[in-house]
Length: 282
Length: 305
Image 1 (cartoon, rainbow over the protein chains, first blue to last red):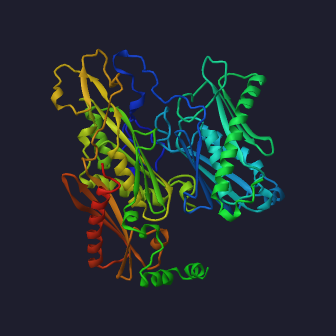
Image 2 (cartoon, one colour):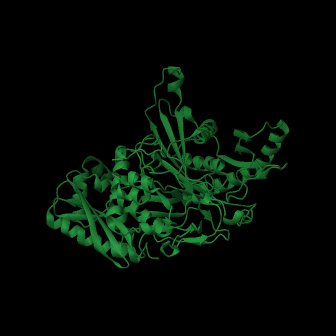
Image 3 (tube, rainbow over the protein chains, first blue to last red):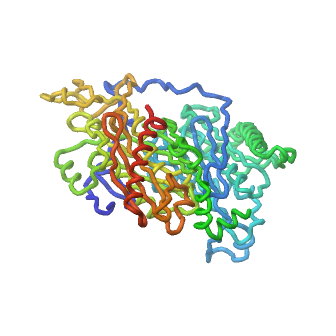
């Protein structure tokens, strides 16, 4: 049925397996205001310096492990599949391929997730592929992949609402899903994001209410608190940053990462049966 | 452990033994309220209308995005010819089953089940008679176009049931910024939809009202909804309503899906019945009656406005 849709001059159907609009339109949020009025002052919430994470696990039935995290208005759902048959590749060393599990991460925004950019396409774009690559590089060092030779683990991440600090929330959610799946880890990985709006000189902690997302530069830091090691860092800037600027951003991210680590650890302890709560997570 | 082993080795006999003792393992079998489901409306800020439905272990998130399209008479006729009535009315509906919801779905193009689900949803909405396309009119040359995206968060049977529950709730909670269209010469404003106020602005094109006023177009007629109720018929004798994944996969069982529409000023009626397998006509009639009862319960429960 979908292939029988007439192709008009206004539509370039890139996705042939789904229903597409007959005519491309303009998102109502992107329409200008009537009467050349300036955009009204943001009536969003006051920036909350102490936003808390809300964790939930075992939301998805048919998976090994799953996690759901809300940080302000940002909502992320992750699920873990595996261990399963590894993918064969002629480019990798067969010995190395079989001695450790392969971790594969998929990251996708729901079509209605974005607060700013309008409807998100079902086809993954460069931003989502970069985020998936960052998640994979960040989480792989924290997992005991050597304990699962000749296997593959898939992590699927779905962002239901992106109101800021999305990538850091995805890291926290992915860590929760991996723990729920029972995979051995060296430490919990938690993340935070700082951003610097256009024209500003100081870094601000990005919150999940859309008040300060979309700045000119941002730094996302993933941190393992117990090991005191940085698991990953992603710098996105319109212009090159000085090393001291990046260092300053990392120092600001460290405390929120530690607080999130404590919250996540306490949530996982509370999930244990009462008899097992005396065993502490390393 | 013995029960789990028995279920693994002979699921059909295990299910029959449970049914003989009036037992079911489905999460939706616990109580009538669980068979009706639960809906959380307006929970996703990125969408103009949104809802998350929970039916047992099956969860769907639905978001509605709106855009404004400029129509020309020739373009409208050419585009509407031969396409689905829902698309012609300006509603683009897609149901997605991403890998996050189940191990059965892989990354990449939508699976056959996802495409079939999209077609089922589109047909049910188009044939329901509950859609009011006139609410999408914005002035004489523009129209709202709705993108309805239903994403599965957890798949455990009765997917059309949970999907339509979320879609109905999201359409009922649609909230858009009020739009302003400049008045054309000789244009009669009395036929404009309730979402339009005309001005004498020199420029053409739709604008947002500067006061930030919002309105709720009644795309679904007030008090109405489109609901699906799934049944599994075993041995033409026993009927399981709102089955979970294991019950749907029972060998030799027939799956009956009844689509109902109505509510408010519209009488509740059966829109269509889809069947996989064979079931006696008496059993199908019983399914239709129970589906109509469940429709009324949904309107009074999770979809109550």
